Image (cartoon, rainbow, N blue to C red; front, side, top):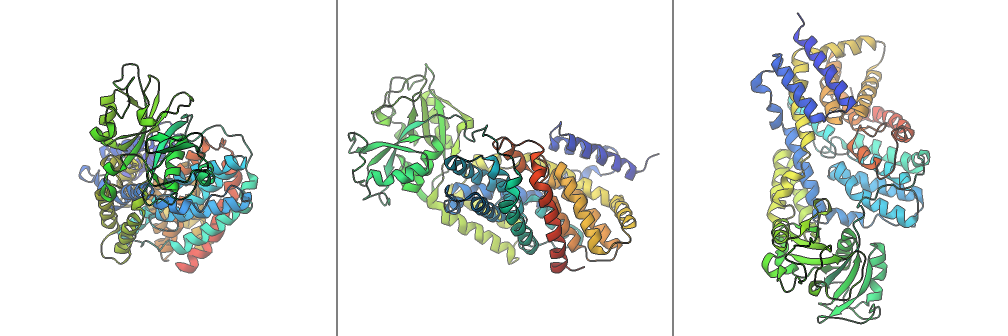
Length: 588
């Protein structure tokens, strides 16, 4: 009769095979594997779902929410606005973008860092008329490298930190990863910015990040303390050009002035008439310190999070033939009609005084719940895939302050990281930086389920003696090698697994094996855990090893084989830099 260990190895073999195949969702595969393990009696039913309460699971979920809060507040934009200059030479651009991506990934989730910088990088590539494929992969690799610098930068670091607490009673702290992570990140970024990008193919762009959203004509009011006051409309042109927005004219005291009003001086309360796509209009409004009419209805510092929603007007909509001004949209719902797209046609009417026609596209701004109610009352159809968060730039510094306080609470051991991040999230909710909808929608539930299901399976691998058996096999086969040689082999194995498996799954499975190896040869397990953390994060050979690599595949028009072109040498560099650094910082 097969033993528990034999059955568990069989389950793990099938699990790995299914994860590599990728035919089914990895969270469902992990969930089924957990259930099968329970049915065979290897895991007690009472302990099957303990993983959902594990600190690593909670921390990963909270990091995703905090990351979105920092982005919604405009805090991340403060950094990004200094990064983009299309006239830089390519190596300098790649190096600066990769450094920015790495820095952001150290403080927010690396997937969120890529999501923000990718659109900026694509805009810069188009303005410089160069292939996006030359810069997106270096940016992705930069964000992956930067995630290794802190505990919250990437899920494997969180998993390894919490595993150390489970195994030895004390976790790795927030910045314990920094010495090794910084050395690897800086070396890796130097490689991708000087050599790596030259190994990539030049391919035409095939995917627009925003899609063909069409151009809107919108009106934005000059704030009372705006830096635009006293400048002419023409003075704003360079800023508008940077954001791919056209300034069509100026509205003063309810009337649109003749022509483009290029020489007119901007006054408090004026409206600029803008043409562009929703994201670029919103970006220009932030840069020029403009606001939507009715902004005072949104609540200031304690106001709720705002959304910019595109909606199409059907023939039977209440709004057809009427204006939003006569329907008192701002007064009824606190929602503003920011712009209208009419199949590329220009119009000189004020946006809120424009009679709406069937087929028009509307750009609505307001709190989520209000926009939903207003859309239903107006009879228009919101396009969910065209919804975006409005940056609440006035809350940037308080968002940063809350995040810093949370990190300090953890670093000073006043409370656990999970509790500190939870306090930060509550603060963001109270300030309206994130909404109740975001609280759940921003959590990557597939990763949460995968992690929660594999934690008990990983524990079972230890309790059945599986980790020790694999460790003894590795020690036997490497008996003639010094500890650093064994560490190198474990890192290579982990890195190879991570190229084809989810990095969280890789960290969960290899961490107990690495500790068993360290204990078998009688050395400190910390360098082995640190090696697993680094290697599990470094998936550079395939588009499936890390979510960031998957995200860039379409926009960059990459093929599967493009990744190893730049990634193979990078993985070798990571090993060459990480092993001696780990030994120096975490001696055997």
